[in-house]
Image (cartoon, rainbow, N blue to C red; front, side, top):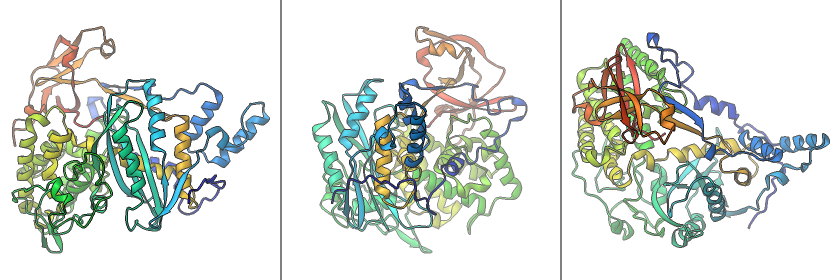
Length: 600
């Protein structure tokens, strides 16, 4: 059943399912086009105000020859094999010593493809891919002795108006400082697979890596993250909207107006790994294909996904209820909605374009928010954008936003994770009275497990689906035709890896504004920070900070405050104190200081 497919007609059969990559780029930057200046403060879209962006030469492949330049160009721009071969023949006629066929230059690999469970399954040589990556990475940075890996599995639908989809098993290195995701296997079929029997070969390969290591480097499984439908499918448990849908605790749901709700007053009784493996309980349907992964705790090592449960779940739903209302709360009046839109627009104009991949569009379009947009509103904009709402609604939203800020901050989790849990529980209980009983669906219950995950893994975004979802965008980029999509994707991926794992330029994003204690600190000369021999940095210290809010607690405890623009002193600061980076929003004569919670 193994297939060595040359895929000769890849790039020729463009049909209605083909996606234009330019449209994808437009979507990625949606919400950014209308970001204008900011009146008299002069910040506007100034990327250099407290920020530095440089191409990271360590993680940007530098082609050494003309042939290498061509390979990088075709990989970066997703040039079809037909067009690239035609270019090679033109260059040959003009005296360049190049092959006639693009496959010769790009070194296509032999593929391992099988038919399993009504799906076409492609198995990547993951050990060889890891070896190649480590070889290239070790030329730039030192590898750790033990590499932590994160896994993800999900369905991907690259074709519009079609039920045909991929199912993936992906791997990421947790403690290596570059966002590289590698596919272990991909499958493709006319619908979701009926079972995951085809996982066995991929899981066995991961077991071999975890048990034996690679070239003297050991590996350890850190987490396995999935969205809710994928988690139920992979773990072989009841779906999240079932009566016993929580895979972390034994709460029993109650259906209210056709919505399965979960009482936030419930005293959490956690499930255990042994109970799951012995099928004790009422939500396990059978054996899971990942049960034999070495050392995996099938309850605690599978975290709640903050991307789907929080930012695309609770946060987005809360925004929509605030805007449109329901049977419990009125919709926002036009003037209040316009005020929120204006504030978000004003704050967007003060965010560097390159620092935030996707700025939030207006609150009027909150139904269309992507996860990055919702995250930016929750962690940054929310402390100013909802000023025009009733006090009790503001305080309610702030409970949620402050809790998420704590659980996204590596410096606050140790001190305040338990407090964040109490705030989230208060938020969940109050949601019943403010947003109605049907708001208490599973996602609202899921956030009550966030503090457990933060204490175990660190900041929630670090164990989320964000990097894997970004990787899944490559399916639209690599696949041009319906014929042999698995082989086509594998060929494109191998060709990219054979050139370099760092084909795409990597920009080093460095924020140059800091919080020291309860004060804003801004270096006078950014170049001093790059001079590692310079121990003391001359800085402006804004030492007149006051809390931005006092409820649910003094905001300076989590380094959120405001200070006057013109009230500062100039002193030398030990460079080792400049650790906590921050974002500054200008409002009148004040600077609103918010720590940079999420990882750049």
